[in-house]
Image 1 (cartoon, rainbow over the protein chains, first blue to last red):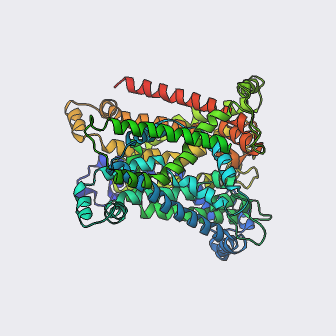
Image 2: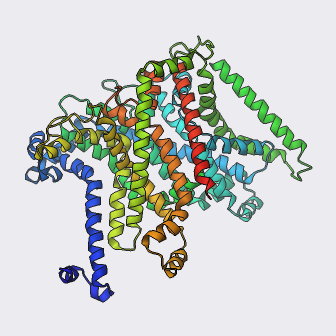
Image 3: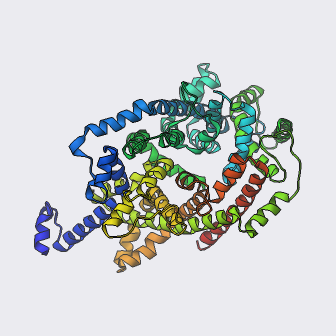
Length: 306
Length: 324
């Protein structure tokens, strides 16, 4: 038995793995595969179901076929996704989400980056007070100020019309923690770069945009990635402040909030629901693949919050 | 309300001016030189951040403190009166009378007690499992992390289908093969919260796994070598090297997972709606403040919750730090 398993392990002999270790490795892989299946089965189920018609879904119930796409009728998959896009208009909500994310990324980096730059590099009366406020607001655990925040935004913007879009973007623009992050990062940029530019006659804003930001690509990218994930995945706040879509008008909901609307459409099939969930998850999946480096960096900075 | 916001803004500006003035007065002693032009540029560049932080960070905190002592009803923002501790009295009556808030408290406690050990235990076990140089370990790591990519609302809707009460739902149909009758998992008080605990841990633990992994990579390898030389076995190495090395990572994870768990809202909201057997504190607050528009009462609940969670977090820090 041992020797047989040993033969199956590719290159075991060449790599100098002993039979005892080989068994350990095989047990490791078996346990890993079982655990992976436990973690992946809901996602596999979601993918498989998104390709099925309601009758194919019902037919597969209780069998292993629940975890495999309906190969017999792949046109059904195209129909599900087609309905989600064309009939339920998920692309509009996706565009909204992208626009909100773009606006938040740009304004968040601009506002907090400028503040971080000032806190790191400029000297002015009252700086010590502001530093204290920044630390204070990060450390104090604010459980739920979402209701007071809602009442403030409602009174400020009225929330009856498209002005409510600002209610999505403005509160997400300010992030005390990002100011702190930018400050930490900018403090480590040597003063020499700036002085060279100043001798050439550049003013503070020019220094910030032409010297500091280009030197800070990694922190800017990290903040941008986390802003994107935050805005894309936010469900509650946009649902609270944005109005329902009016018939014949472009809706204002971002994609996560729209999921509730899509779910409640009369006659929607399980396959279509799953297709809408997958469409919603794809951009985040792509971001995690493309921006791995910055996400891992973000994990490193998360420890700073303590 | 606009008036009170202006008053708070004025107080803030005055306090800031006092501190700035103090800085100027003591500048010679501290050997700092201020230049007017630099200071003006600095204020100008800080202005957007300060205005936004004032409106959307500071003001909500102060208001939630203040509202808790008023009868603020969202549709009558100009008719707010101070009512002392009435809201808090109502909170305790609601709990004592086994009202919805009582259930919210019980359910939230159940969720926290269930999900914190489950999620952290899983994260720790998975991190130790994939912390190998094998190629397969990398693949497993990606598999365990995959659910993190899915947002909470997508997770809720996905599991709503998995736990569907019909016999075609994933769980019911698989159990049906074994001859178990279909159940309504989310409407049954005995199974609803445990289901939500499991799916939340499933979605979240990959994130903590990565944090534990980065903690593990910070442990110096020569400590393990030294332990091996002393003849330590795998278990002994774990208790003597790995565990102490993970301590600060662990404190961070416990506190963040605990605070996150206390805030649970999306899952019950999307999966069951406002029901006694799944309502949580955050959901109760949201319902009172947003749907029923009793901002004053909702703020009182929020204030109590902040105090309780803040106290528990402080105790956690004390307990885990003391042993260092």
